[in-house]
Length: 78
Image (cartoon, rainbow, N blue to C red):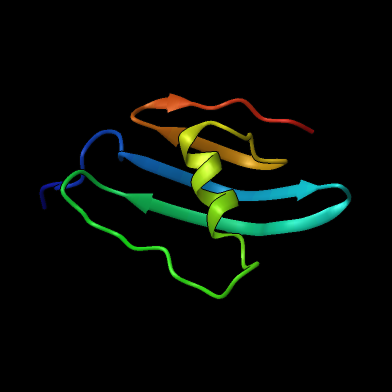
C-alpha cells in the first residue's frame, strides 16, 4: 500500500497546550492539515480560536507540545 500523505504536513500540532497568566487557554490539542485540505475553526467566544491561530502563525509558542508549520518546528516554552 502506497503512503499518500506528504512527507511534511502543512500544519502539525502535537499535544499542544497554551497557558497565559496561569490560565489554561488550550489543553492537549493535536491537529494535522495536509496540502490541499481546507479547514475552518469555529467555536464560541473565549474557546481559544485566536490563540490556536496565533500559535499556527508563530505569534505565540505553545506552553507544552510541538508545533510545526511548513516543515519548520516552532519554539516551545516551558
